[in-house]
Amino acid sequence: MKYYKIDFRTYFELDRVPSRAEGEKIPNAEDFFWKMNKGEIILNAPIFDYFYLKSFDKKEYWEWKLCDALGFIGEGSQIRGWYISDDLKLLLENFNIALKYHFYETKLLYKERKLRYWIFQFPIEPYQNIDFKKSTFKLDQDDNVYGFQSEEEYLLFYRKEHRETKRKLKTIKVCLKDNFDIIYTTNNDIVVSEKLKNVIEENDIEGFEFSELDYEVGVRK
Image 1: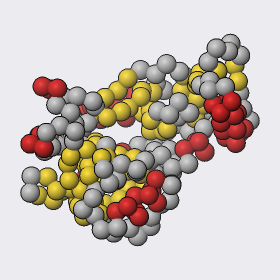
Image 2: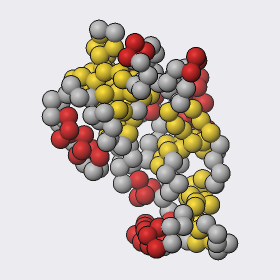
Image 3: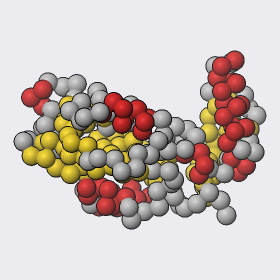
Image 4: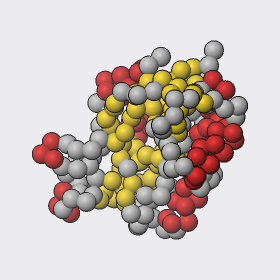
């Protein structure tokens, strides 16, 4: 199975930048969103009412375009995840999403109407989905190939090298524990299967761009 890096689209026509979701109007927003940042899943959360669109462009362009996939800005920018439309949520639920993740219902105020949008909290504890024994890595300025027996061993080595030598640990191959269609990798990327990429494009889901990977993603046999 082939995988692609997925990210938010950077620019649209006429060099317009995409707007993002601002959550400053939501009661107790900071408390909720920092819990999400720390990887806590908030069960029985309220419907977050409401987000609105904002960007670094002029205010007159904040609502120039509504995408299915948005990042966060201001209050909510601490969330690890996406802000997504109802259509995109329904699409993702038909695919194998790597654990852990959670959806929270929200309201988005757009052109004086409130629409149903979702916080897709992802990833949460992502390295549990990777088989480190079958994954390989390389340090900057080092021809040696490294492998690790566990997530803990990988993180210990990564932090030690970063702290002491400032060298980056690059991914050569990530081995997944299952046929995930969307997963966070050790290269700090979110990647999707070719099948999911094709369905996103076929359904005209807006807000993403895809790129080729410079490392291998495989699935444990």
